[in-house]
Length: 227
Ligand SMILES: *[C@@H]1O[C@H](CO)[C@@H](O)[C@H](O)[C@H]1NC(C)=O
Ligand SMILES: *[C@@H]1O[C@H](CO)[C@@H](O)[C@H](O)[C@H]1NC(C)=O
Ligand SMILES: *[C@@H]1O[C@H](CO)[C@@H](O)[C@H](O)[C@H]1NC(C)=O
Ligand SMILES: *[C@@H]1O[C@H](CO)[C@@H](O)[C@H](O)[C@H]1NC(C)=O
Image (cartoon, rainbow, N blue to C red):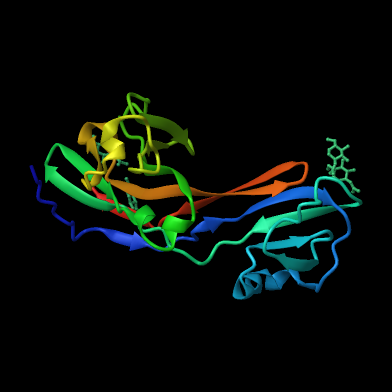
């Protein structure tokens, strides 16, 4: 059974600052190598280095991995995991009838460059003005109160094959749209809703004596929908 999706013309996409970088501090032996200004950290990616690190927050070094002898040493170094400038695609808003609004999350995680970035914890978020709406969690929907008058809804979106939950549906990816349907009553008297997606990019570095986990949250552009 296939449903027809109607793309809304009233949808405006607002470009937002899209990532928060993940940094970890760990003690290491003094590291040799070329120093650059920390303003130049993005140039590390040009040589394939995924980390920029510093002991004084002024002079930085590029690294492809966190040196395995970190975990003990003389100097505290802060390592930041660098991501390419990637844009997480925003959800697509669809309406099937006057009682509900749906948001479809694109299957970006199966395409480059995301497929090699180990995405996890994919969420769909909806923010609106509390105006008669309950703003309470139920079922799959988590509700949070924000800035006195706002309500934020958050829904975990399972990524087929990545979030293998043990149910066969996710193992055998049926390619159906990753759609979440919201009853309009959820939004009370709000006049518009802002939707976006967030996903976590993880990177785990092995040290002789343990490991260091980096987690960066990527956010898509926000989509404003008028109710
Ligand atoms: C491993 O960790 C212990 C303490 O947790 C420390 O005493 C030891 O020096 C570390 N060894 C290496 C090789 O980092
Ligand atoms: C490194 O940081 C830890 C935690 O902040 C601190 O306890 C330790 O004294 C620092 N070591 C050095 C050598 O600065
Ligand atoms: C609140 O909702 C009512 C209808 O339920 C509407 O008339 C009113 O304009 C709304 N107020 C705001 C600030 O959105
Ligand atoms: C969204 O609705 C609120 C009132 O509910 C209004 O103040 C705000 O300007 C609207 N934003 C947009 C982008 O339409």
